[in-house]
Length: 335
Image 1 (cartoon, one colour):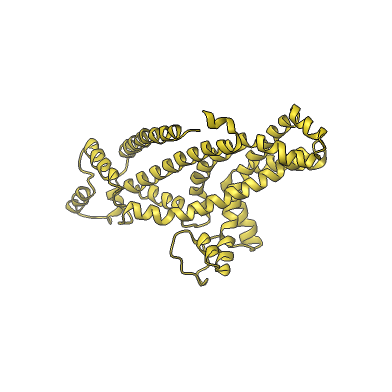
Image 2 (tube, rainbow, N blue to C red; image 1 turned 30 degrees about the vertical axis):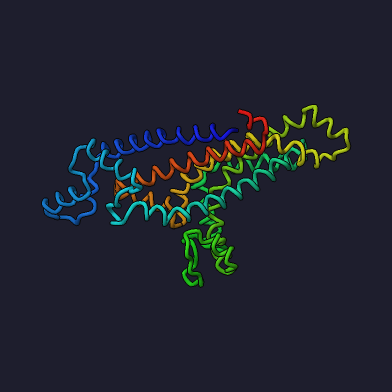
C-alpha cells in the first residue's frame, strides 16, 4: 500500500465529513422544537428569547447559519453548547478519552473472547468444546449490548454486588489525573490502587459492549479457519511434522485474520455508537452520556460536534484497518 493511496484516502475523507456536516445541520433544523425555549424558564419575556436566539445565531436563515458554522468549523471552533454554556470542542475533548478507554477495553475483551472461542471450536472440531463455543456465540449475539448492561446491573450490581455499576472511579480514591485517559495514566505512573478502581468500573460496561462483538468475531474467524485448514499448504505443514495446535496458531491463523480484522474495524465505530446507551445505563461520563443530554436538551451545536466526532472516528478506524492489511497480507502493499 503506497503513500499516494493513503493520501488519496485522506483527501476523500474531506468530502465525507462535509456531507455529514450538511446532512446533520439541515436535519437538526427541520426537526420540530426550539432549543432556546428549552433553556429559558417558563414565562420568560419574548425579548429575552429573541436576544438569546440572536446570540446563538438562530434567528438567521438556515443557509446563513450554515455558512457561519462552516467558517467556525474551518477554524477549529464547533461553537458553544446552548445547554451547558461551554465550548463544544472543550466538552468533546474532556469526555472523549473516557469513551475511548471504554471502547478499547471492550475491543480487547471481544478480541480475546472471540479468538479463544474460535480457536477452541476449530481445534476441537466435532466435539463438545465446539458446541460450547457455538453456544457462547449464539447467546452473546442474540442479546444486544444494552440488555447485557441491564442484566449485569441487576445480577452483579444489585443481587450480587461484586462490581460498581456507576461512575468512572470511586470518589474516595486518591487519584489526581492530569489527562482524560485515567486508566492509561494510572498504569504509566504506577498508581495501582487507582488503576484497580478504574478497571472495576470499566469491566461491566466493557463486557456489555464486548459480548455481541465477540460473538461476531467467533463466527467469522471460525468459518475462515475451517476453510483454511483444508488448504494444501496446511496439509504440507502437517506433513512437515507440525502439530495441529502449531499449524492452527502459526500457519492458519495469520491468513484467517483478514476477515476478522475487517469485522473488528467496522464494529469499532459501532462500539463507539453503542456507548450512548451503555454510558447512560452505567452513568459513565463519556461522549455517549453527553450525547443523551444534548439530544434531550436539543443542543444543536453540541449534537453537531458529537456527530462530526463520530464521523472522524469512523474514518480514522477505516484507515487503520486498511493499514493493518499490509501487515497481514503483503500482496496488499502492491495495490
